[in-house]
Image 1 (cartoon, rainbow, N blue to C red):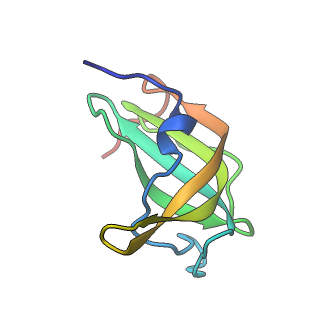
Image 2: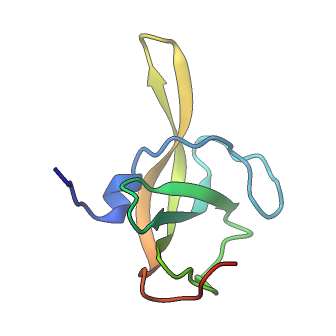
Length: 111
């Protein structure tokens, strides 16, 4: 069964692998405002967030959309989700608001 939901809802609580700005490499912490670039390739059910930016480096658009991918630029903040059973905390995206989105039909083929 395929479940559909707005991208903002799917990215809420997304667990990040790294908490650094992709441009200036500044370490980002819980509570920091961020801009996230998220992508979902055609045929995939999951989203990934390969790039995260601090507010100083945030982008205002998707300059070269990728053919066959839904791309989303969103603003939000970082939060910390804790699993009490394992005593592990993870940096997550919160308060996601869409800035701009490109559809799989837009853009250019990647090499």
